[in-house]
Length: 217
Image (cartoon, rainbow, N blue to C red):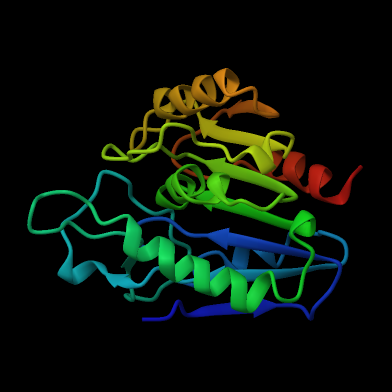
């Protein structure tokens, strides 16, 4: 199985991968990114591989701007009751190596993840053994059955990480991001925590902060 995706803009200096959350799809954040001005960048919006109508619900709803009923998840519950982690990691490996890293210096590749997409940032992206440009998890959490000792690879010790979370989030409590932040601080990561007014959504002010980081301003 391959990861489906859409892209906006042509190959440029920087690549930004936006990972949607539970219930989203590759179109979820198209309206959002159209208004975001990032200089000389190409956006990639990968779609999670597992249809939700065949999967149990998780506790992480997607802030979905799409009218499509094509709802997807980055994981599914196995017969033993655990959530599948390794299978989507392999698919993401193939997608990144074949589509993104083949065309961009990894230090110019940035990841944004919302909700379950932020969990993908913690579980998978931060452990990539290539130096990345920046990692920005929003309204997320660390997977319960994660067996990772460290979230961060040695290659990404200095990679800018900005965690965003709404103070009134009643879907994923802000404490989930605080747990991830404290763990990353212990790992001596280059990490900031940005809390904002609101619920389970993306703050425009937070997004401006990460755009400044990507643009180097």
